[in-house]
Image (cartoon, rainbow, N blue to C red; front, top):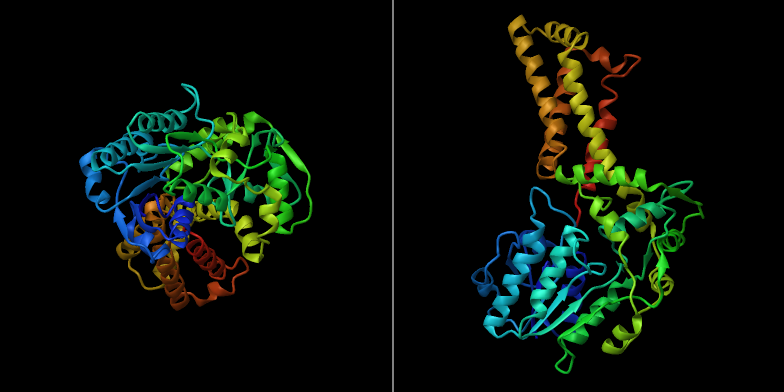
Length: 434
């Protein structure tokens, strides 16, 4: 089959786009950032789509030419300045499904989510369920899959957060002690499930819950990940719900600034939903029983790179925020006394006249402030980091030329630029989410 995978560079989509060709299928990837898709999966052709924008059947018809089946893996957790959840989950997929019906493409597989049953749960659940219901109302050979927690050697979103919590030193902080139940399924078994439903004799018009063989509290999942990472055992600390809810609201704010993370109010509310299901109906339909969580981990031993990543997941937003606050503080200190007087004195000693020194001072204040602000926004973060490196090296060069003694002062104002540069380079090195 020629299979169009929507969201093919996402967590689930990328594994499908890599796994389906091994079974003989021709995969076409589709997503908003085609350049990223081509870098990550250069072996498949790519087409541009944007579920925020592509909300009519006409918009999807060019992508469906020569396609035999469609798998939709796209999804977001909450609205942002870039994404409209109703469009991404509901209006965009609904128009895609209608275009498939118009084009005679019978097989459509929707990767949905568990815990979206019932009206008024969360906007995430309502929008996901709305798309599922539209697909199930069409005369297509549809399959709707609502998996529980999907895990793999790689991680993203919720699985990344759980891995980061597993790697915290001394103790593992979990909301309400990690009482929330999940039924984790390994990514390979989810890919195997999709492959089953692409076979000519596969059942259709079916809603299933891909789950692993054992319901598990989050506590056991995270401590299992800690053992897998090869870290020493640590006690679990129960974090009161009020504190977790406050942290989730901060996560919502940071998300609007472009700091991606999974600790958000929607995730917290979805955790309270039922995230387990009866395995028998799913196993009967696909013809196999997924691996146990512990077995799947044991078959893929963790290495140093997994430990590094787990430790950096929570460090990364702290590094971003710390650098942004440094540059904002630098602007404020230089604009106020006594910092302003000291800066003007250095510039005067360098031969700047009164007017030129003032221009240089306020130009530096503006540059520092702009860099600090832009570091808060994902869209501009890389450019701001490169600008900060240029400005830092410029400051160091000018100060070395006019006041080399600053290198040997007890407080080390120039020596401290070295770790600043290294921290910025580290942020650039771990900036990518995918």
